Every structure is written in structure tokens, then in C-alpha cells.
Length: 356
Ligand SMILES: Nc1ncnc2c1ncn2[C@@H]1O[C@H](COP(=O)(O)OP(=O)(O)OP(=O)(O)O)[C@@H](O)[C@H]1O
Image (cartoon, rainbow, N blue to C red; front, side):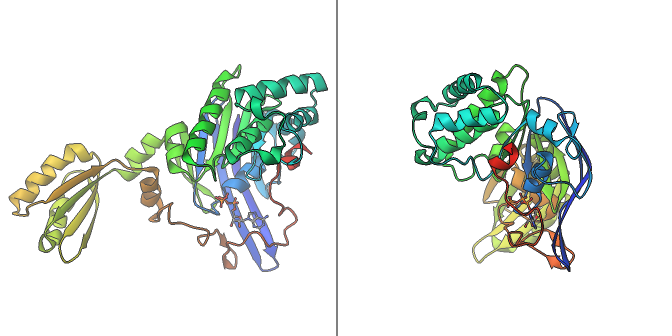
């Protein structure tokens, strides 16, 4: 469904500065897969999606989407895909049903078919009651569901969602996901979905495959469970008296399966954090070893890893803390502005771009 080879995007920001937003991504996505692209701000997620959806041309490399090359057959690609960008649908003063019908017509449906499809989607996405309201009057969650409806109006076999649930509260996020998953399986052939997200739990729960992107490159690609097992390991935290922490850390270093040990101490307590392959299985052995060394453990916690631990294991940075300041490399050093640029294709993605 998607095949890229060494896909690259450089933005020439000024005579002396080039932002290397995407640095040679090669990947294959099979039909029916649900893939989450995860990474810090500025990692190159949106730029990758914009190349795959034909909004911007690659600097080099190739990308085939739904069987067509994005550079030589952009129209064919556009007809086959749906794209829900970060900006959301336009037409704020339009009625919801008119907006959706118009989008269907833009995709070549005749008016009657477009209207029927619009009502079908409004029903499926729980927006029938809002059909006669103006788009601008919708709540955040309703607006985002309308965005998804717009992306699905021409029954694409491949849907791109750029941060679909950013800004929604947990209830609306769950609700949006319920709808997305229902729409996915309701299609004749299971829809392929590629989404970017900042929500680690969302990628963990819903995606069948997680691509971790950093500095314009894919640094990990597997199921969330496999990534966590291979790259993070469980976290066993042992608390002891402060004077015992260093010795306990040395004991933990020698335990079978230990990947790393971190120690912190304050006046009252020492904390030894042990990354280990099988936390629940390894804990009794750790406690026995501590006891044999005369180091009484006050408290034990065992935590399963998160995708943030995976990112931490891969990069030494936490995804939660890696903010805009950690932009991509550019020839003149770090650049995180992106917004003010002399590049010719610097406009943000909008629904209209896709449909034009
Ligand atoms: N048109 C542009 N001109 C110059 N730089 C750009 C342009 N578009 C994106 N960039 C830069 O390319 C890098 C990758 O941006 P991109 O939007 O792809 O990241 P992202 O992973 O989607 O980030 P976020 O999670 O914040 O949306 C960023 O440093 C951004 O500033």
C-alpha cells in the first residue's frame, strides 16, 4: 500500500541554512495495517505524511502510495487516499451536511451520490443531529469527527490522519477512536490507516505497528509490545536506606537480565531503578541477593515499560520532555522555527490543498 525508498525532504530556509526534515526513510506498509508514527516535535512526521499525500514533493528518494508514484501520478494517489490534516476542514460558515456534500462533489461524486454518502457518514460518525448546524458551531470532538468524515467521503482504501486527537479531552479522544476503528472495519476491505500522534497510550493501544521517528529517520519499527520487550524492559524499583543504595546497585548490576541500573539518594532514602528483561520473574532473585548482602529492602515496585521508555532506551531522551527546542539538524545547527522560511513549499497542510 505504501512503499518508500530513501525518502528525503530538505527545506532550504536561507542561503546558509537547510533543514533536513526527513532523511532517507524506507518503509513498506501492507494493505489493512494500522500504523502509528511516533516522535518528538520536529521529528519529521508531518513532512513525511505531506510527501506521501502529494502535498509537497520529495527532495530525493521515491514513494509509491496505493500503487502510484507520488511524483509522477499525484492525481491517482489523491483519488485513492483520504487525508485528515492538523488544520481540519475549512468552510466554517457552511452547514455540516453541505460541507460534506461539497467535498464529495470535489472528489467527482454526482450531487445525489455525494449527498447520500454525506448522510451515511454523518450517521456513522454520530453527527446526524448536527447536520443542519454551521461547521463553526461544532464542539472540538464533533469538528474532528467531521474532519474524519471529509477524509472518508470518497471511500479511500488508505487514510492518513495527522494528529487526529490532539486537543481533545480523554472522553472525546476515546469516542473518536471508537468511530475510526468502526469505520475501518466497516469498509469492504479493511482500510489502511497511517497516523501521527503525540499520545503514547494511543499508539500503544490502537496501532498494530509503531514507527518511531527521530531527526527525520525511522529509528524503530515493530509492534508496541515487541518494541517494549526488546528496547525497554521492565522497571524494578527498590528502596533502601541511603547508605545501602550504592552497594545494592552493584548487586543489581550482577543480576541476570539486568540492562541498566540508576541510583538516586536523598537524606532519608536510596532508590535503585533496575531495567531488567522480566521484572516480575527477576524480583524474587533480586530480593534474595539484597538480603544475602545484608541490604534490607524497604519497598519494591515493578512497572511494565511504556513507549516513552522505548524512546528513552533508543535516544536517551524522554519523548514527553523532548519539546520543540529539540528540532532537526540543519546545516547551520539546530533549527526549530520552520514557520518563518523562504522555502517555496512552506504553507501548512490544509484540506483544500488535498482537494485542489
Ligand atoms: N516548510 C518548511 N520550511 C522549513 N522548515 C520546515 C517546513 N516544514 C517543516 N519544517 C521543519 O522540518 C522539521 C520537521 O517538521 P515536521 O512538521 O515534519 O515535524 P513533526 O514531527 O510533524 O513535528 P510535530 O510533532 O511538532 O508536528 C521541523 O524542524 C520543521 O520546523
